[in-house]
Image (cartoon, rainbow, N blue to C red; front, side, top):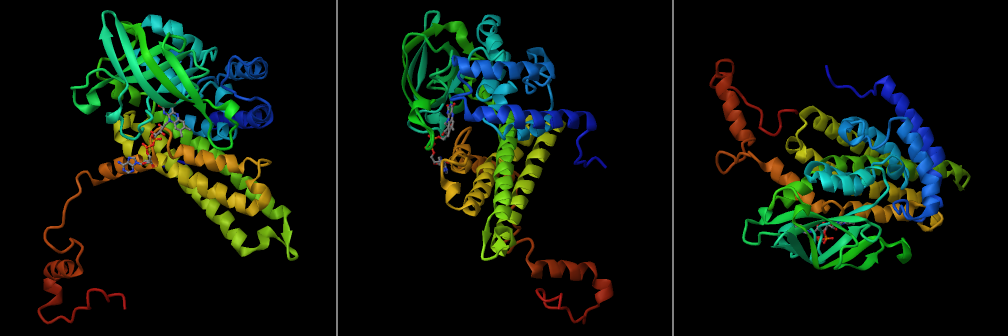
Length: 439
Ligand SMILES: Cc1cc2nc3c(=O)[nH]c(=O)nc-3n(C[C@H](O)[C@H](O)[C@H](O)COP(=O)(O)OP(=O)(O)OC[C@H]3O[C@@H](n4cnc5c(N)ncnc54)[C@H](O)[C@@H]3O)c2cc1C
């Protein structure tokens, strides 16, 4: 029997250490640092760098990366358990060297960058000395990448990139940006684009504005509307083969979605803990909120939803480790991505309700998490698109009924059963009505 829900003791020790460290040293940072990604902020550096050194000394730095890139090369199960803890904080992934979008961008550079590009961008990125951005979505809509317009044209030994991108996170802080652009407009849609890397200060890169999610001050807006005005970059800045941009894009997403999922579990658990605390702290009509059945139902439902989702994510992580082939696990990953915002929104909404008015205020984190749940339903592909992909996978090989009636039509099944047991039943047996055999 290989089904096992236990963590091996040596790794559990690491998780226990992480749990203490994140709660005591990392969570408070969220309240004093404006933007934990911003490596140009001296206060951020003074507070975060010593903690990153502690994490490195513990051997837990950038564990999502393979050993050749200085990571531990952990499988997805271990990474999932770590991300559950990191999800409690905004700063956590940065302190542990696994923050998006840098982690995914590092994977692309590691796979497809030339030695010069790796030296210039990947190495300082892995040391968290610089920031990166990923520029794929366009203002006309992100869900249908075959409709993207940003183009790259080869001119001598340079690519010239022209177009607009939308919601490129951290582009205003970034040293470099990874950009998807159409290079072969006449090729079939999924083979018409290529991936490029460019320095943010290349002439022609224009940050039109940052866009802030609701509840974040505009001054901290880092999801950028970017215009590429005939930006010239060396021909060697292409990442992967020409026309393989969509395949290259996949490099950054598979494991990352599971990490996001377990971080969402971490946030949901925090919202749940807050709900439980509030319910036993607050009284109404001579009893605590927790003594009221309507509140108890909210607590029970929330616990069930978190546990159900956590099991789905852990099983998906287990399958990724087992098969080592994302194509075999794509439906699991799509399911994980599709349920993530719903689970988080549902638990956070109940926690807000149990908190009463303070729950919607800026004095608690719950409202921010509610908006984040919507962000999770859009970033890295909208929920609806993941459901479409999941359904497509599920319907592969589905067989239609043999005729106008369903294969499970009881009259059909009964006729087959009568034929099978004809020797025992005999010709005059009094058969139960098909729908009433249980009385
Ligand atoms: C927090 C956050 C960070 C992000 N960071 C980045 C980043 O760093 N880089 C980057 O390139 N992008 C980034 N994005 C953008 C993200 O990838 C897009 O939001 C996403 O791809 C959806 O595109 P859209 O916002 O244009 O919505 P649209 O594509 O306009 O979709 C709107 C709605 O229509 C639905 N819809 C679309 N097509 C169909 C269909 N065929 N059937 C049914 N429903 C459909 C969608 O599911 C969605 O609900 C980020 C988004 C968020 C929220």
